[in-house]
Length: 83
View 1: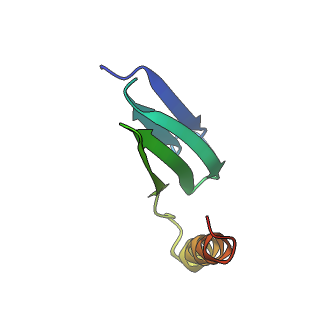
View 2: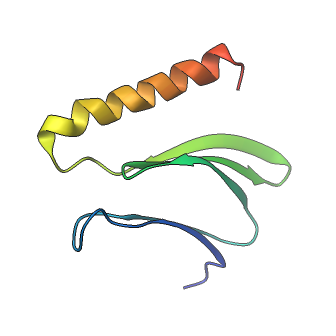
């Protein structure tokens, strides 16, 4: 692969998820937060930046709403703080 950088979130158990974010050297990626279900980033390329959240769907249906609530709360904090 042609990716020079990465960020990994270990799986909770063998064969149970885990996240990998890979990027090329042309990008500057700052990981803001991460957990078992998402990686939240600030990405810069060619003097422009944006925020991106990479989400892994919770396999347990009973916990999916909890993950979406976490993402919604994170987004509300960013809007309130002008991020």
